[in-house]
Amino acid sequence: MNCKNIKYPILFSFLFFAGSIQGGYAQEASEVETGPDIEQASFTLPFDFPIVFSGNFGEIRSNHFHGGLDFKTGGAIGKPVHALADGHISRIRVTHGSGYVLDVDYDNGYSTINRHLSAFVGDIARRVKDLQYEQESWEVEITPEPGEYPVKAGQVIALSGNTGYSFGPHLHLDMIESATGDYVDPLPFFMEKVKDNIAPRAEGIILFPQPGKGVVNGKQIHRTFPVNPTQPITAWGLIGAGIRAYDHMDGVGNRYGVHTVILEVDGEEVFRSVVDRFAYEENRYINSWTHGQYMKSFIEPGNRLRMLHASNGNRGLVEINEERPYRFVYTLSDALGNTSKVRFTVQGKNTEIHPVEHREKYAFKWDRTNYLQEPGLELVVPRGMLYDDVWLDYSVRADSGDVAFTYQLHNKRVPLHGACEMRIGLRRDRLEDKSKYYVAGVTARGGKYSIGGTYEDGFMKVRIRDLGTYTVAVDTVPPEIIPLNPGQWGRTGRITLKAKDKETGINSYRGTIDGKYALFGKPNSISGNLVCELDPKHVKKGGRHTVEMTVTDGRGNRTTEEFHFVW
Image (cartoon, rainbow, N blue to C red; front, side, top):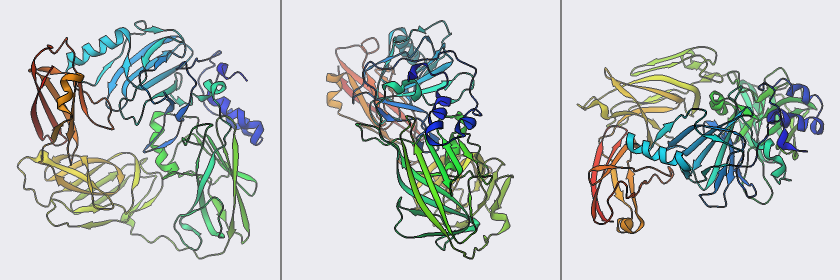
């Protein structure tokens, strides 16, 4: 099969499995929204060496799906990245999150985002550097006109790298369907170049008795089990299932996300997930679909993620109401058709199910706006922020010396689909400079991390994205600046500094050399080092120079340090 000329990469992935797994699949696939007919859309490879992936489309990440393919580059940076088709460069960015980023709009109805590059090429490289000095900022963005930077298939458009939030050299490639704006799986366009004969493998299963409606092994809490349970699993009432599984590929040790998961109970399909496309605004629905690395095989009522499909009329939940064995079968498939199955049995056992005990004021409903007002605390959770009902395990405590009470909204993190407004009152308002207060999230072990917030009439106002535990803290300690290998700066032509802050993090930085702006950046956000590559156009070579770096944290505390070197 020639996969280069597939019109709809996502529709293809549906149809590819239709005949091999079960009938009726193609009918479901035809209902998936796609863009207008794109005649013979095809792409060349981004590299001129064999492709191997370190990550695939839709992998489970914190609060989001992995939006594209990660191409390995042999552990090296600087590999030429080629245009995939004819088109034009539409956006040029340097960011702390994705490093050097290049967007390309192609004439065939798709666009790509190339992330973590080490460098741009040609006029774009010169233009970006000029703009960085002009704006005195490492982070810049350019939106060229469509005719400014045309590209042809195979043309070198950038060099691969390890910039931004990257754990190693690679190219991250997002593919976007222009007609819908959806992120789509690029793999079908490159399938004939991919070697993969390994099916996905499951590593565990999980069962969720629904609150007040179900029980598993005599308890009304979720339970995890090995893929081949050695002990009987019993249940009664309404339960949901989930699975932890990963895909694998020939010759590499990486783990990937699973393209298609189908759950059948007693021979009838109840749920299917097909990770083939999503809109950017759907990203946080991953918090509803997953439980850690487990993928749920049911849909919570507030979850609108289109890649999930329940076919039993009950959102994929299973009613265990007979004392008999219920046969569960998972079918796991990757995008190349490799398939595996997992089978287990749940024995129906009539067991008493206790209703959920709660106070009405702490019962948050997914389909309404919820308010919580307590002494020193105000919280509004608008409709559409919760994926399911939540019965808050609310508590408050006074920690000695703290400027505010510590409020536990719930005993475990409940992700919200958007930011919700919360206000915490101050018990001890002792600071003249109110900007030093910040709202802190509190971990299970008592650690604190900054959420931010602003002071307003005795309260700290902030927007939160999780129902967790919060308090107010103070940050008056300025950041620290540490020179790394200063004796080598002159020889390497590279100045490297480490900026550290224990509480609210580094918010901004600015460096000069001999009193003139110096282009310091954060090439790799994992290391966090501030780096300046010395340029004789901006720093006169041959003498002693003075570096001055100013770093500001999230509460406005500032540190300025001077260092000297010879170059």
